[in-house]
Image (spheres, rainbow, N blue to C red):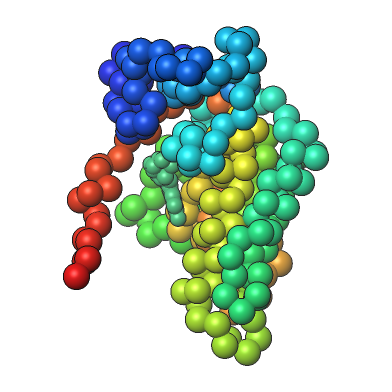
Length: 247
Ligand SMILES: Cc1cc2nc3c(=O)[nH]c(=O)nc-3n(C[C@H](O)[C@H](O)[C@H](O)COP(=O)(O)O)c2cc1C
């Protein structure tokens, strides 16, 4: 569970649910939100009995803020139900798409297919890395990483033949689809990791997943249950990134 500074920092980003707030009037209390056994360090305002309120489904805001990158080495081996995988993919399919091109193409790796992916990833890393930059520990982690997550999805972008819609718009649409997967995974108690190293985005990977020369692979997305506590996130204040113009 999240404790101490990490929790306080995280909850501090949720000003509307202050950790130390006293019970409010009208029967509403602040209770820790637990979901799939994880304490996300979020406090909900609720008027439900304590036992039920812990199980309330998260709001969209809570999902967005608790979505976390969890790397394969931090995932446990528990398999993900096939219908849950289908849910992740269906949610991806509802991403916004300029011109309704729906450019996302996913290749789903499960079971032993992950071993073939791991071999291919490591071999590609060796092939595209200049000898002076080759690192054995990187090769070794590429050779094992896809087998540490129960589900790996290659993220593809299929270019429309006319190329009427710009490549940047197509890539943005695929990124929205990946975010849908990651948020949907969060709702199921799953972590995700978008890995975009050069081998994962290489021409060799594009060929491996059967895409064409005009298409791109934008990396691999790993999904799995966290083997550790749900991690805390950090962000700099939004105020530093927004300029307001009001007149
Ligand atoms: C397009 C994209 C590519 C990414 N590629 C990598 C990567 O190759 N290696 C990595 O460690 N993290 C990668 N990340 C994940 C970030 O490290 C992660 O989002 C960041 O640490 C913030 O953590 P959070 O996702 O838990 O908020 C990528 C994220 C995005 C959006």
